[in-house]
Every structure is written in structure tokens, then in C-alpha cells.
Amino acid sequence: MSDGGKLLVNATENLELTHEATYIDATAIALRILKVPIINTVMLGAFAAATDLVSPESLVKGAQLILSRFTDEKLKANYEAIRAGYEEVKSGKTLH
Image 1 (cartoon, rainbow, N blue to C red):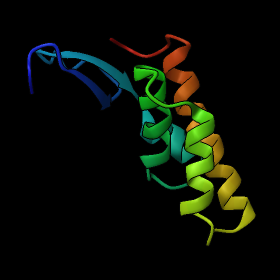
Image 2: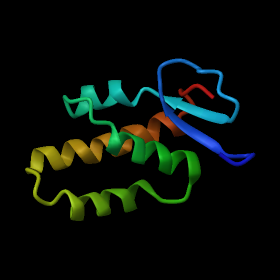
Image 3: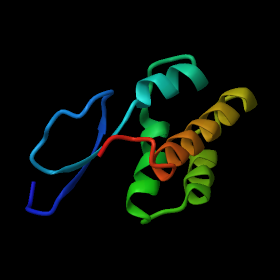
Image 4: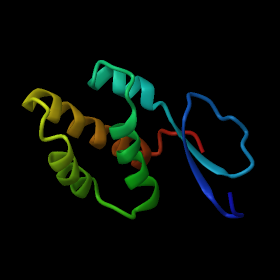
């Protein structure tokens, strides 16, 4: 990774990495919302919050297209997971 690079890490504690890192317990959020330890939508929301490169609304729109085969219940859970990851990072509750 280049100097000045930033990491977004799924972990519950600071791993003392040499690069700047934001830690989020995406597994716990996924288990709470999705009922499975699949963290991708949680991490997408966290990425949006950490970088401001994409809005959570844009991620939800993309998820609507990609996950269109899912049931309405699963779709809503994935949208909630995106928003939860976003809010977790934006709220400052995460470790840095």
C-alpha cells in the first residue's frame, strides 16, 4: 500500500497497523441485521462514510439492481446493512 493509504478493517480491536485505519465490527452488524456473517453490504456503507466518494443512497440504488433477485425482505435487510455501516463510521463510534 502506498504511503498515506487508508484501511477500512472488519475488526473489534485496533490491530496497530502501520497505515491509518478505521475499524468496524461489520460481522456483528451483519449478524444483527442479515442474520448471516456476510459483511459486504455493511462494508460498502462503511466505505461510503469513510471516503465520501459515494453516497449511501447511490449504494442502495446499485444494490436494487444487483440484488433484484432477492425477496423484498432480503433487499430491505441489505439496505439497512448499508445504512448501518455508513452510520457506524459517520457517528465516530469506530476505532481509528
